[in-house]
Image (cartoon, one colour):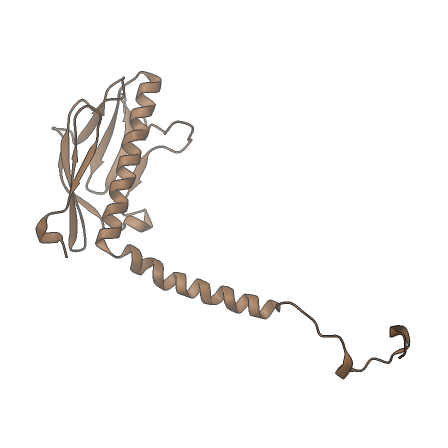
Length: 174
């Protein structure tokens, strides 16, 4: 047998290449992108998924405001509109969560995941705001009624710790 340096190479006896071609990777990525493009809107189009995500986000924002007010020892409020909410201090300036530079602001019409969600009724006193005192406690409770498509949730905010109690009316269940 001849040493490798003396062997003649022809296309038929060229060593086989191993690995994945760039074209195969691009095709795979395109298929994943198309699947995501179809699946994500369908997933978030489900009222149960969207409203549950809304409640989780509201709970997170209430906790962030409570932490902020307790740390700063200054009261704050979470002002609600039919299109979302915003955390502000006593003078109306936006508040950020601890360690964050972005203010706590939610706008359903601008946040793609929550587009179409509406707070139909806000029962939180006369100014539609949840007040948090300098100890981080909700000074009063109230209710919100969120709707998305044919689903809705009643969100009760308890005075004191600010716990959220969520109910789904029997008429909205599947």
